[in-house]
Amino acid sequence: MHSTKEENASFPSVSEGRLQVWDDQSKDLSVYIPATGFLNDRQFVIVSLVLLSISQLCNAVAIISNSLNIAVFVRLGFSEPSNISLVALAASDLACVVISIWTGICFFLSSMDVRLPFDATNVSYLTGSAPWAFIGRTVAWITAFISFERCLCILVPLKVKELITSKSTLTAMIIIFIFTFCPCVVAFIRYRFKWVFYPYLNATILDVVPMDNEYIIQIDYIIGVICGFIQPLLAFFIVLICTIFLVVQLRKLSSWRMSVTSAKSQWQHKPGENPAPDSPPAQDRISNKEERLVRMVVAIAVIFIVSYIPTCVMLLCSTIFEEFAYFGIYRRMYIVCGLLTSLAQKVSGGVNILIYYYMASKFRSALRCLLCLDRQE
Image 1 (tube, rainbow, N blue to C red):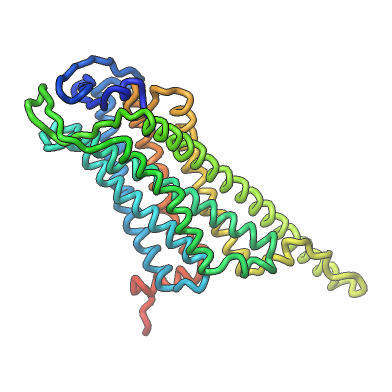
Image 2 (image 1 turned 120 degrees about the vertical axis):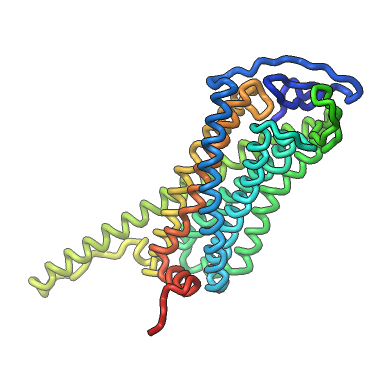
């Protein structure tokens, strides 16, 4: 959704280092714009294909793991509100993976110079890259909601069951989806599918062309800044702040338990003394069950933070440098960075099943039962 100066007149299509530009679709004007960056054409193709190959392997793992996550949480039921948000998280990760597979296929076909009835690069941008980016925002905000929910369990333990119910959690998931994904519709307003005649191909193929309406361009820019920059960074910092708070509370709880153990040991030798120090606020507010859930949420959030840092850096660079964009001069570096951030997020979504398995006993039992690993003698 990031536009460049060249897009004011037309939508560029890349072929053999040339940007083919059509102003009113009635006549063609071939403008050569040298692509700059740290990679030449051959290096770009090799690096991209390697990253895509690794990405496809991660896609296979992520599809299996997230499908199992959804199946297990559905099996456990939704009496626990947290199961609803975890299902939504797995479903969003799964949607990102499916879209990523389509984008990878289009890039493979484009790099192999396969003659297609459509421009694989441009069409995949509108049908793959843009939806993937918006669904990625959904993953970020669901993670932020899960982290914030655990913070409420510590801050207002007596009211949290009234605030966080299955109905309210489901409503929150729907709002997050609308808030993050629906702006993607603007991309389909700004850009349209159209059959375009390409002189160098001597063929008419399906391509993507922009609307020249200034009003639509301004809306696209505003939505791009809000949803492409402010929205994901805000979610990232919410997760970061909530995670720091949860880690601090867990450390306080751990310190209190160590002091209790030490005091009890001393009290056994000196019966007249107080057996334990005063209980800190966190102890009064976190049960053993809640503590295990908080630890699991912290693990999910930490992995998300680590995997989302490259995305935040890329967003900052694309905001500061206008030409660092999908259709900018630094297009090759933008695509490579995009592949790296995509790979990091796939790994993040794929390893969640390991966190659930080792930190949630109900999930572990349900998964083993689903996979028929626990055989009754």
